[in-house]
Figure 1 (cartoon, rainbow, N blue to C red):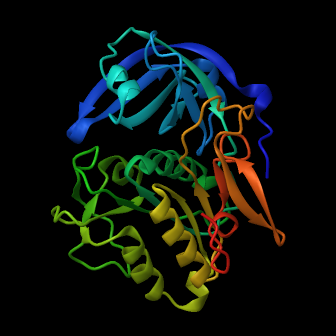
Figure 2: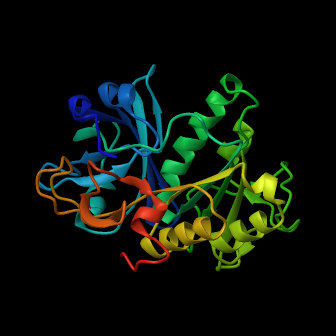
Amino acid sequence: MQADNRETIFVEDAVVLQHQPLPAGQYLMRLAAGDTASQALPGSFIHLRCHDDLPMRRPMSIMRADAGAGWIEILYKVHGSGTKKLAAARVNDQLSLLGPIGVPFKQNNYRSKPLLIGGGVGIPPMVFLAERMCKQTDKQAGGVNPLVIMGSEIPFPFTPRPSRIMIDGIPNHVTACMPLLEDWGVASRLASKQGYSGCYDGFVTGMARQWLENMDADQRQQVEIFSCGPTPMLRAVAHLAQAFSLPCQVSLEEYMACAVGGCAGCAVPVYQNGKLSMQRVCVDGPVFAGNAVYPLNHDVT
């Protein structure tokens, strides 16, 4: 699968509308970027110039987009010089961006029980995808009922609250959820090894496995998995999906220079149709089939 959206990658001078500091050096930024917002899909990202004196851009996942209002939101964590300068941006500042870029998650024909798994800075695409599914539910026969599982080993970029939505197969004491998703009517649960109140004590894949094991075979056939997060988590998610014979899409996180396919600096090995090839995360991805990048029978990393 290759990107067919190169004709709709825009260069915009986006304006900072909101910039909210969050725990553990995380920030939520809303940008006026009408062209990008009009074409953004769950799994899309932008390539952002964090400051005028930094020529190299940084890839940022899109967490939400409102085409009508012309804004997008990104969630990021200060990690290096670029994001440190970005954290100093103020409302009304202009930031140059390229976007939206990349192959998104599938946009329709979802199974009725999608499982969305996000870890750390991989949380934003799951929020975007959950919102899209929520808006499409009434348009699809029978609707879809996504479950979003999020994991973090630093404080979550929102204030968790106890969920009012019951989930079969999840321990009763695991109640912490993301308020935004809860307000949309989307079930969510949180996982961490840090002892946060109401969270599952373990990895996201541990909670996901427990949920799947509590289903019968017919129920499990209504599940498909979507995920974004650090490489070890994505590998574990892909292997979990293969263990249960479930379709799975993963969105990879890679450093990149150009973000439009020219430099091939973000290429990763992908196993398809019995052959191994190098694919560029920026334009051939970032979304790939989980078993193509992390097959059980081939140690592709």
